[in-house]
Image (tube, rainbow, N blue to C red; front, side, top):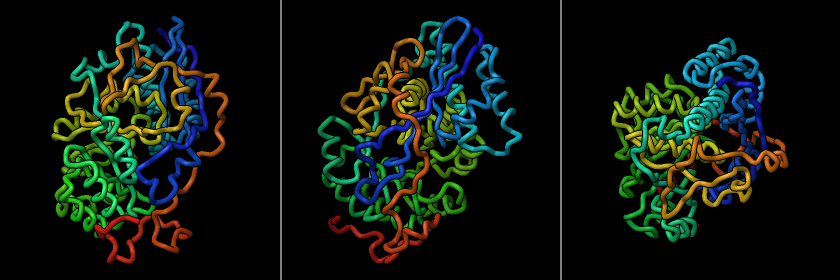
Length: 399
């Protein structure tokens, strides 16, 4: 089965209805969210689908550039094709999530094609079923959002941002009780300093979080080591990384308890399966990032999480843009906080290309608002000490 054509499908996706940061400002996803899908055609008539992220507009250009190198390749040679793509982009330097986002899209579609040709779900090729259902969590910026989620049977909520984060986290824990898993995501902009992240982390310890996510920027390795030493909470990170080599020091140094590879940025199911094995050797769990992604990557993540032993939980935006369900043919079954792994051939999802074509890409960059100290947003600094510091860890009633 040979590749005869690779087509990219870029679209402007609408903003999610709610995120963990909704109470503190406007997410970059509100105006700049793009989704990028690929379809791979073969000489047998089978078509595979995939999704690439990282910087979708640039990933789309990368796919267009790479496609001529892949025409005529045997779909079965998934690993070799992945190696070929990495060699092809090597001359451009370390292209990060753009290069690996392109690889993710191709790799995902190849797994889809191989499973379809064998009339089995992708999870079977990944090793079979460890679990038929995957727990998921949703974002909750405030008590009201958390209560809505719990009323639907969801057993995990994540609150994000740094403004009043301790206040909001304590209020949500009081509302949902001890039987619901809570997560806190501290990512920027701007990023916290290590000292501020430690102070917040210590204050959150009594909440028994499932994990504390991205307390500081991913390139501050020494800062991560300090936080690991000072904060008694499970730590999670990895959504902004693209390769196994970037993840390696976090695993080797025991800096994370949960790795969060982005299903569209991390080189596809082949690399994510390898990462899961590396993490398993370190007793680290896997919880894929999907906050900005479209529905095809979510299907792929469900298959992976079904097949690996160290799956923890999946991320979902619920509610999301109302057009999300119209992008695809097929739907994930999600009920009572559980995603049922698809049992159809391949990934179990198709694309509505006519619908996608109605939303051409208009913008793919933006800057979130609400995270900076008062009066400093125009500075747009990467890292910032929070002031006034006396309010950093306040547990008072959030306004």
